[in-house]
Image (cartoon, rainbow, N blue to C red; front, side, top):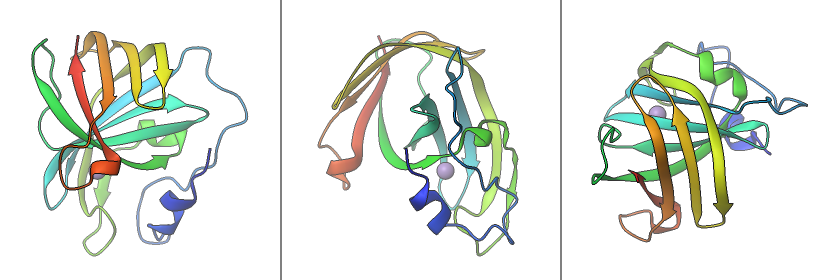
Amino acid sequence: MSLTKYKAKRKFSKTPEPEGKPTKKSSKKPIFVIHKHYASHLHWDLRLEIDRVLKSWAIPKEPPAEIGIKRLAIQVENHPIEYARFEGVIPKGQYGAGKVEIWDKGIYELKEKTKDKIEFILHGKKLKGNFILVKTSYGNKPEKSWLFMKV
Ligand code: MN
């Protein structure tokens, strides 16, 4: 899986974020991380290890720990696996400027994946249990819009 967009958006001489590369092997147990990102608009970034990169979605409101709350999740560029450990401050003027902290992380189990639906079990501290990402056309970026919810 490609990190071309990730690299194109960043100047690695100016941001502390990892430059990264796709890893050769998948983890035995795939990982997930949710970053809380104090960018120009506070949001949460859900990242799932899929095909040796972190597939990523930006979620404008706090991710749901309970059933019954749907969150819009905008798919963003793949991030390198090393990004799962990243915390720091992206300097002013750089892409995504602002503080990034890990909000939750752990392993996850993939249950089913199609082009418009991903079902998985999260084993985090805050998020535990069955979750789903399902494609939607809601919002102002319909081709990148998904809904994220606990099921
Ligand atoms: Mn972000």
